[in-house]
Image (cartoon, rainbow, N blue to C red; front, side, top):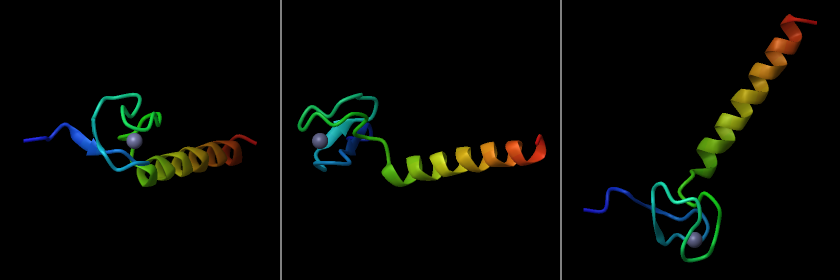
Amino acid sequence: METNKLPCRYCKLPVEKGDRRCPHCGTLNPSMDVKRSLIWTVSVIAVIYLLLYLFQ
Ligand SMILES: [Zn+2]
């Protein structure tokens, strides 16, 4: 069982879930899902805009 292994977002080789760097290609946060981080960033920006709109 390799439940803690996730494919690197760059080279697709298996990396440990908590690894900060891919041991194969050196990409930072290799297990971080690009799509999820994009959604997270967009939602943070949306909240900031909402706060700016409410408190102007
Ligand atoms: Zn990699």
